[in-house]
Length: 335
Ligand SMILES: NC(=O)c1ccc[n+]([C@@H]2O[C@H](COP(=O)([O-])OP(=O)(O)OC[C@H]3O[C@@H](n4cnc5c(N)ncnc54)[C@H](O)[C@@H]3O)[C@@H](O)[C@H]2O)c1
Ligand SMILES: O=P(O)(O)OC[C@H](O)CO
Figure 1 (cartoon, rainbow, N blue to C red):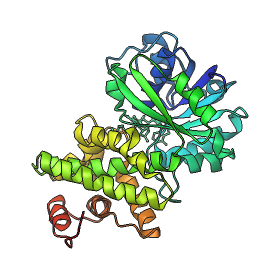
Figure 2 (cartoon, helix red, strand yellow):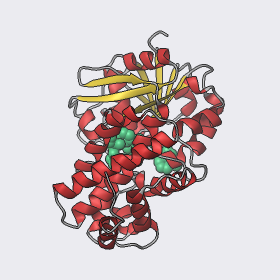
Figure 3 (cartoon, rainbow, N blue to C red):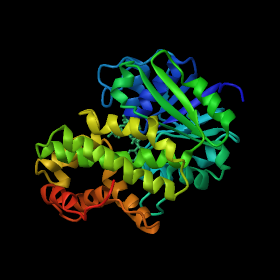
Figure 4 (tube, rainbow, N blue to C red):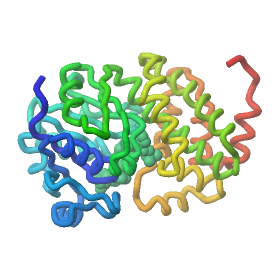
């Protein structure tokens, strides 16, 4: 499959805008759709999306619009960069506009609350396309670092290897190195679960705990994520890769992570509402996905103790301190 000629990125938040910049820097012809006309105007006029990426100058070649039909017109790749719990509704609106045969790419990291579906499953269903047409980009990809052109690797996953190669080509830059993969289940489960583990790590930071606690959460978080992924049919090796361990470490360790920051606020004693207000409308996917992942795990008989306590802290009034004590007090077992 040839390198894509026209790419539409739908969603001009932190990651949508950054990924559009990556694609433009890689030489692709990119149009970015923003919900708000003023955001599109600012990108076209001052080359800046100040609300999400202050201080980042966007490439001259990147065009923005608030007209989704104009954005996707003639696109051979359509990148979906909206929060996971809104993807179904957004995509249903865009579905009649999608060019036939276009590769549909998910940037979202979450599991849908109402259906427990992965984002690629939601896309296949709503857009009514074969799964070979759906791709996922996921990895240790904190938007602000990539917007600053710091060296980063990622994974482009698609069941159709040729499409993955074409997309890999379209987003390769001197600072962004994509690897291909065909394990969508593993890539997406890893991407959704790491947000939940990052919430737990943030809570640990908020409680004043150090690196031993963080490393223990990361390692046991990876164990429970892998258990779920394998139960769903993923390749266990995926969890040792960029979209698995790589993203887990980046998100759990970085103060730039919205999920970790959210967890830190809860660990310091803030309420869910206070932490949500402090996020200024930016999405912390783990807050909702902890519930859908917990349900998915229960459906498949998989134990996910960290995810379970994160859900109960976020939604059932459990306090982070007792949650930590509960995890430590669990039945003793071999590693
Ligand atoms: N920011 C990152 O560093 C990063 C990196 C990799 C993956 N992701 C994932 O990408 C997805 C999008 O993240 P983001 O960082 O761009 O989020 P964001 O909160 O910065 O932006 C979300 C964008 O979606 C738009 N949107 C459309 N419909 C919406 C609705 N109904 N409700 C809320 N917003 C709506 C918003 O206007 C906004 O432009 C998430 O799943 C996230 O986990 C983010
Ligand atoms: O800021 P977060 O917590 O949504 O994480 C961003 C990316 O997913 C990191 O890869």
